[in-house]
Structure formats: C-alpha cells, structure tokens
Length: 237
Image 1 (spheres, rainbow, N blue to C red):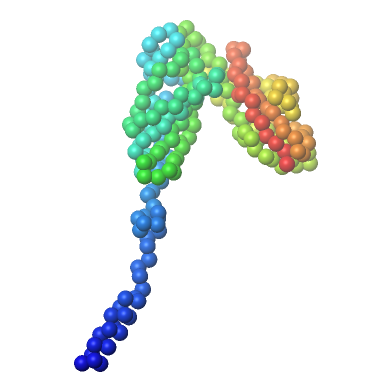
Image 2 (image 1 turned 180 degrees about the horizontal axis):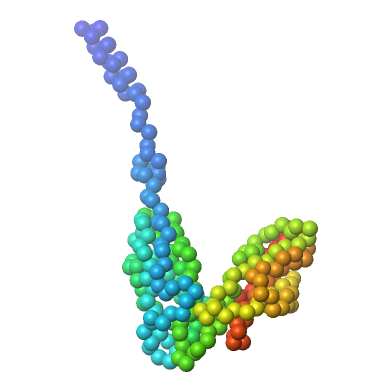
C-alpha cells in the first residue's frame, strides 16, 4: 500500500513539472499585437487640379468636400489641410471617409490623411495631394509652391568634392510654368543663386562642411504669377 502511494505521489510531481505553453507574442498578456492601420487612398479633390466642385459660400469662401477610400484596421481619420500661401494647417478628425470643410477661395492647398486605430498607437499617412480652389473672375492661377525634395528639410548631407545638388518639383493647374528662381545661402535671407532656370534641379552648389544652409524656390508662370516654396534648411557634415 505504501509502495502504491509513493508511485502515485511521484507521478503527480512529474506532471506538475511538465513544460508550460509559451505565451503568444504581443503585449505580454497572451494577446496578439493588434494590426496597424494601412494607408488611405485619396480621391477628391484631384491632385494638382483646380477644384470646381465646391459649394460657394461667399466671395471669399467655399465648402470643399474631401473623400478617400477606407483603410484597413482603422476606426478614425485625421485630415490635415495646409494653406500653401500661409502654411497654416487645418486639422480635422472624423470616423467617416468624407468630410466637408470651409476654405478660402482662390487659394492653393495640400492635404493628406492619417489613419488611426484605438487599438494601437501606430498610424499610417497617405500621399499628399495639392489642389487650387477656384475664385471669381480668375482666368489664370498662380503655380503651386514648389516642393523641395533634396536635400530634405533639416537633413544632414555629405558633400561631394565640396558640392551638393538641389532638386524640387513644380506643378500648376494651368500648366504654364516657365522658369524658377533658386535662392541659396548660409543665412535665413538667402540671395538668388540661379535665376530663370527651366530645370527642376541645380547641381554642383558649393558648400562648406559644418555649416547650415538655407534655400527656397520661386516658381513663375507665363502670366507673371509667382509662388514661393518657403524656406528650407539643411546642414553639411
């Protein structure tokens, strides 16, 4: 009888020392990590286009409806609308995939969507589109401010033989961009580096290691309209 009791006791100990199941990857509680939101796809207003579908409120304002395709794993959206003349941003939040916002007429804007989820801190940002709100009695519109692409704002770059290349993109609803003026220097009020270039790049710009440089591009069209990209800065390693 004692022998049988001893065998049973040993069996219980062995069973209790068995391998425990591994927890699932995630937050430590056995739960899997929630999936991150995906990028939304923009629909309207069209990119680099004149927005004529808004509802005119007054001589200075229109109601513009923004629409985009739903993104996965998302329960809310932040839409950031930037006045490209003043650089002021109008952030809006919604759980829908459409939103109507009152904006200034005869003004260029950019916009993008940030997809969010209450289950995770991860977000996803859409592409950025530009559009121009039509104004009364306007037959030709100023170009969109150029987008400075390289060097990026605040970037630290390595010069090649004491030189760097500048690059940007331009767009215009009328399609009549003619030239660009490039301002460049080591102060926050840079001088003209190159006038009336038809290119969207400027190569072999002289720089010095350890210094910070500032640059901007002014876009011109055939009707004498201009737009200013705004001032960017970068440093040289």
